[in-house]
Image (cartoon, rainbow, N blue to C red):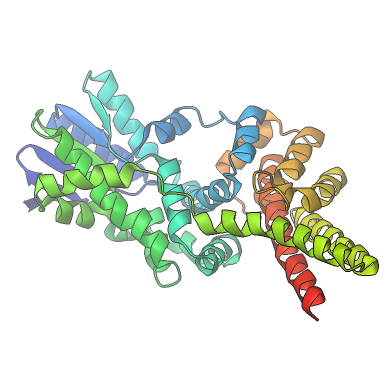
Length: 390
């Protein structure tokens, strides 16, 4: 293995890696030069098909997309992805390049030269779901609070040379967050290093390969390439699968209505009508108030607050429903995002867009509405338990 300048590594005569910063004009020029100089038979890029589509059509987000996100329960993951991407976008604004510009240039240059292109990164949805699954409740809170509310001004002072010498922004951020979110770091960095290396091994033997990846992945990719191809290749199937949904939340959410109705039945059997009324009031008030408060914190429309509050006492009794869905759908209808809203949110150069932008607000209303409803159900269940056995 030989190493050149600007994070260019020749792993073998038929494989060259280029480590880039996703917001660097210098990286864009390096990619163009290397495709001409190296003359690859295949250009491999650290992208999946969905991320490539986003780069090619950065304004392709409409109400149907948002509605699907709400129905699929993906609001928290989209917010996490958006918060991570925001750091790259903010960096891009100070360097004259959009995040991923060098990856898109690699694809376009290769296609213009009739060179086959291979997407070698794992699907972003799988990555985010695995990261979300791996993190515990406190990890999720620490990561989101760090991304959304910590002061990031010092990042603007970094030079591109420093970024290239360290890692791409996503990897660097998660390296810093390993101590507070080791599960996310493993998924976003270690697993992707192994996946990228496995995909490179998969397409090897078809000629000279030029792989364009974030600089932060270089060391991990090289380490994995030194492992037997069978061992790395075998992990691809495992790393490509979405994590199984945890059973315990469903069990608990199913147990809550059983406990509630069982408690009411017990009190009715004993003729405790006042206790039944108090139980119903506790359930209705705590669910409605906390779900409505969650939507209010997201600066939702009054009708969205009302929808979340009215839905919560009912949806908390049905694991297949969520109050945030109704609040988010209402927000989508009463304050429909425009094309400009989608453009501004996808730029995400200011964290206030999570609350002030109509797209961001729909996502926040859905996520915080669900959170408030869940907290309300837990507190109400605990209050009824104490009431029953006091």
